[in-house]
Length: 329
Ligand code: SAM
Ligand code: SF4
Image (cartoon, rainbow, N blue to C red; front, side, top):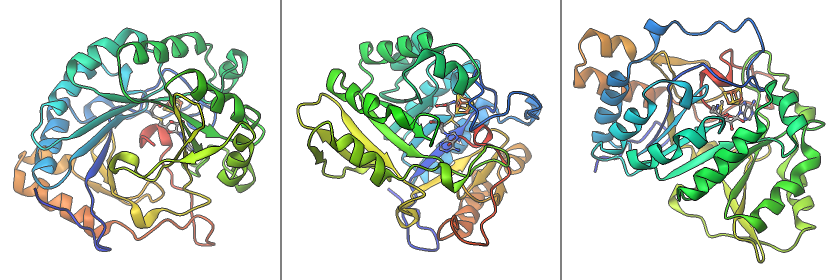
């Protein structure tokens, strides 16, 4: 197995692929209600092109893939894409991030196609607040999607919660309590400055030290020994719980030194860092010739360009322009 190293000797083995910038929700911190300039259909990578990238990258050292969006389940034929990626030689781990709205309908087919684990985003357990945050009244569908994912034996089912001050920070303990009732992995994510008008402000970030303190009131939090698939998450369980609690803290604890990923946007750009607008085009190479050598050249160009770390908190930091819905989170 080849190993891909970037200029800072980090091993890069993970590709996050955003397959669409369309979404059936409009989360206030991610996507504006109106006036979104969506990527034209002809500019979107086709599934054939995405599979080609995965196949070539997998031969060169990428072994983990996550599909995301926008909302990946709104793109027609996504189950076939999952099947194609699951059957690609060298891909050992395949996951999906979804808002869960369409999951009840899709979960069984996704499992049959080869998906084994899933992340579902849910920032509140209150239907009325859900309608406010996402600007859509679809809490019931999401919760049913979560139940269906557990029923279909997707393991683990992770719940991603972006904690934002004054938005949902009063629900931290309610989310943590879910891990007593269900085998869910609840992961708290710090609010990130992505997209020009997502309302980010340092004041709205709830540091995870604070979230941990609150959860600690529910019982002893026992650390879980790190495993390969953890990425930057710090994992714990509450004594007696069926599930877990995790923390992804890009703001309060820089984990850039451990970063192992590249991102592919729906319109065929490789992003080397979530927080940087620097993008490397791969669609040109795909549409010119689908020549493997050219794709490998682009991969190495991306590795060379990958920055050492983000500059959040630094005076030189500039919010990136693409919204999270067009990058994939
Ligand atoms: N639509 C799918 C979903 O919501 O799961 C996939 C795409 S969404 C962009 C991926 C993840 O990014 C979600 O968990 C979402 O909550 C998170 N996200 C979006 N904007 C964010 C921000 N500014 N800071 C932190 N997380 C963010
Ligand atoms: Fe859509 Fe996901 Fe962004 Fe919410 S976070 S608007 S569900 S892409």
